[in-house]
Image (cartoon, rainbow, N blue to C red; front, side, top):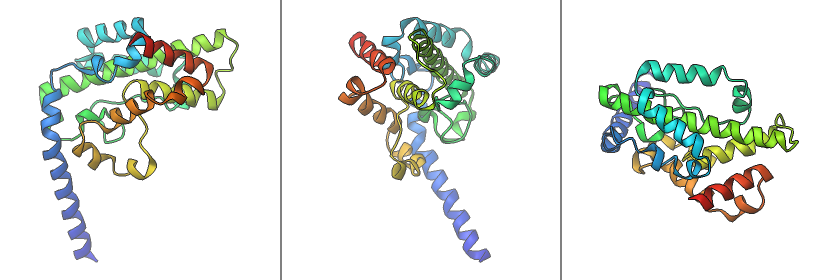
Amino acid sequence: TLMNKGVQDGMSKMKQLGIELVSAPRVLQATLDLSAPFRQGLYLGAGHPREFARAFKGMMTGFGTKGGTESLELAIASDPFYQHALDAKLAITKAGSVVGNQEEIFAGKFLRKLGPVAFSERAYTGFLNKLRFDSFKSLLRDAERSGVDITNERFLRDVGGFINAASGRGDLPKNIAKHAETLNALLFSPRLIASRMHTLNPALYIKSEPVVRKAAWRSMLAL
């Protein structure tokens, strides 16, 4: 049993090393390119230009520093809409975190400890978190003015799902999601691919909640 455990541990470490090596070129390519606004953030930002501008300005002036990142995280966590964001399963990722709670373009452990990579990941993550959260708040405020119950769980999930997909964080099928780390090493950004498929689905513009449908049309037409 101990021998089997040792073999399994060894295989796991080899797999992780392989993932790190395969992921390294992508991580380095994304370092210092500040591409989140016009990659993951393009579709959502087109429909929410004010939120996009605030997130972009913040990314350029403060999110690259650890203190700026912590201030943003605190501001989001202390916001009255934060609990709604949790209920909606809104993607609030964390730089330096583990697979599943990070922006997939910076998957891996070793390179992310380097200064330029760490800076880039904080800026990338900070921009997307602020854009997602501020856009989420904007949609909820619009819904509230229209008399919608913004505490309804199904409504929140629909809004959260739309914001996630519209900002490059699409849901992967369950049978694929469990292999997300390996898949992410082989493809540049599988959740981004899934998000683009979601925004090209006609059902989004026809059958979604009215608030989501309106936001989707606004983003598509602006884009």
